[in-house]
Each structure stands twice: as C-alpha cells, then as structure tokens.
Length: 290
Length: 219
Image 1 (cartoon, rainbow over the protein chains, first blue to last red):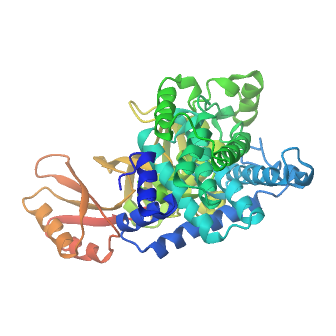
Image 2 (image 1 turned 90 degrees about the horizontal axis):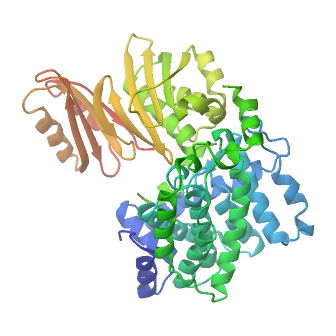
Image 3 (image 1 turned 30 degrees about the horizontal axis):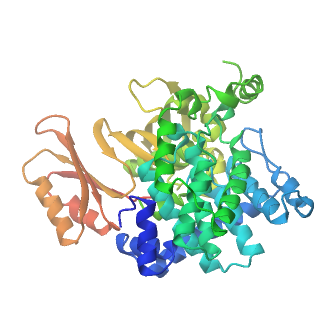
C-alpha cells in the first residue's frame, strides 16, 4: 500500500470489511517486516507516553523554558464539571493544553504529527478511553488509522508549519484525530474520511505565527481549538453528515493554500500574532532587544 | 515514511526541528567521534542562531554530543551533566552561506585527541540531513540505519564492503560516495533496510584500504 490517497484507504478497508486502522496495521507489518503484535505494542508505548504527558502537564507549577507559558491546563480541568462545552470536551481540551504545555517545558511527548500539535490526539483519545470506556486496544488501532491519514497528508501536502502554516500542523493533527475518533467509536471507513475532511476544512488558512518563534503562543491554545474541531467533525461524520468536498481534495486545497501563504506567516515569527506589539514585547522579554 | 514517523518521534519538547532534530545532529557527531568528548565548539546558523535559547537547542545539541537520544529525560539538564563530565562547550552565531535555516556545525574533540566535524540541518519533524562529515560532502538523514565507511580511494573497496553486506543479507536502499581527490581519502555512506548489525563493523574494518567503519542507528 502506497498511502497515496484517503480514497485508497477507504476502499481497501471496505474491500476487507475491516477498519482503516486494521488496513494500516497489516500494511505496515509487511513494510516494516515486523509482526502486527509488535507494532501494536510499539504504538501502545506511544499511547503510554501520551498518558504520562497529559498527567505531568496538569501540574499547576509547570513553566516553559522561556517562562512565557505553563500551568493553565489544570485551571480548565478543575472547572470541567461546570464547563459550557460539557465535561467531556473540557477534559479533552484540558488534556490537550496539558500535553502542549508539558512540551513547552521540555517534557517528553509524542509528536502527533508534530511537537507543536502534540496535544490534540492525546487530549481526544485519552478522554474517549476514560469517558466512553473504549478499550485500550481499540484506541491503539485508531492510532494506526490516524497515522494512515497522516501519511497521506504528509505525502500529498505536508505537516510542517514552516511549509504549510498551522493548518498543516494543528489542522493535520485534528484531521487525523477526528478520523481516529470515528474509528474508535465504531464508525465506517467512509465516515472516518469525512471526519478527516471536515476537520481539515475548518482549519484551512490557519497561519503559523509563533510569538518569539517559540512553540508556545498561540500554539498551546491552538491545540485546544484543534480538539473542538476534531470532536465536532467526528460527531458530524458519525451522525451521517458527509463532507461535500472529499478528503483528498481538501488535502490538496490545504497544500495550495499553504503554498500561497507568505513566508511571514509560516513559522518565521515575522507576521500575525508574532508581529503584534505584545508579541514583540514578549519576544524582547525572552531574548532581549536586538 | 511509516506510522511511527507520523505518530512520533517520542521526544523531549518543545520543537521537533529545534530540539529533537538538534539532539540527533549532536548524536551524529558523538558517533563519528567514537571517543569521550571533552570539547564541543558549535556554530549555529539561521533560525537556530536566533531562537536556540527558547527552544533548548543548546541543551539538545550538547545532549546529542554526549550520546543521548531525543527521548532522553536528561536533555533538560544536559548542560549541567556536560560540566560534571568535563565536557566544555561553546556556541557561536554565524551565517553559513546557502545553508538551510536550521543548520549547525559541530566540532567535537575527544579525550584521546580525536576530532569530528559534522555539518547538518534539522529539516523538520525531528528529521535531519547531514551534509558534511569531517569536511567531506555527505547526504544522509538518519532515518535508516546508516554505515559510514572511510577508506582510501582504491579499486575494489566498494565491492568488498558491499559483498560483506550481501553475505549478511542486508539490502542497501541508498548509497553515496564522496572523495576529496582521486586516490585520496573517500567516504561511503550506505543506508540499509531493516536493522543493521554492529557485528558487520568488525568485518568491514579489516578490509584493506578501509580506514574506519561506523554505524549510525536510525532514531
């Protein structure tokens, strides 16, 4: 399997009457010359790192290396029972912030697909495990599905903010996670593809404008936003709402939008939020005046 | 590209390019040195030069120079560890012409007088591209297990090396040769599928005209 399109993933899963996660697992076992059990175990180790980072990031005293961020995750988590968006979403969002803050504090995380977007997948999947009582094995399989979508996105477009803006990082992470959530909740391969498309559509055009060039502001909160987009996309797809534009075409559009983005808005910290008066002041606070 | 490139690497934050990739660049220098490092002179170019402090790129590079991996918890306190172990280090901001925005040049000195010079870029997602090794042009990513064989430019050396690889059942997926001048010192860079074995190094090292062979494991 060459992972050239989402369509290929869906057709292969439908042909074999199995999930996309199973298709990706089988294909990778062949490609990497390892047993499926070994690969499940390796992915499980990544899930364990995610669990640990979500826990560690809840520390209210956590601060990033620059001192700009940290300690926000637990604030939301504590208020989760009274949250406007409901406790499931508040916890998922809190966990995403926790992982992203832990990353900024030089904690150990899983890039999914990048370090800048590392909170979205654990935020959603850990909460599914806890709240919806989805078995660990199902979650790990859904991570293979997410990875399959991620490989297609990387091949057809890109997942680097420097290349495609934040839509390529948090956008891809949300798209991959939305597909994983559909699979974990027992949705069809076609629904997983729709969830991927819907999530990515909702982040098209999002620029990468990190203050002081650091993976903190606004990256951490964009992980929170990514959770909301991923979860709503998954629910829409599970409810039978179809993306009018197929996932493959959305991915191509994401690449085209990324290509036409000015360099100032692609991780160079020259535009957007990085170039605001406060953004510049924070940069000087960390690195001094030029 | 496989599933663990997309959901991975497992790494110490905050940035796959400025932290994880930096560890791996340092690690290439550590591997190439094959000695206890006592001094690291590191030149940073482009975005590495402007934002290295906030990303912990300095800690990451030194961690790599001591052989740590991108997932090693000790990266956070690598500078203290370096001092404890007697590894001196310096960072200089430079402008390397035509270099990738995230480029580092590492000169690593060993206890027994050895020296390794590595120039490479962190190209995103924790991936690296090593461009120069001890002054010779190379091009490898560290995504695959890679053998680096330094040798004299004589007929048959490549055949001898690849023959041994054939006997080990090893499949080459990328090969590059570079030499400074005809008959001079040359360098083979051989990337292989699957897991490469250290045992092969002993055999490669006894081949006539091979100066040294090392294995850089994929991360």
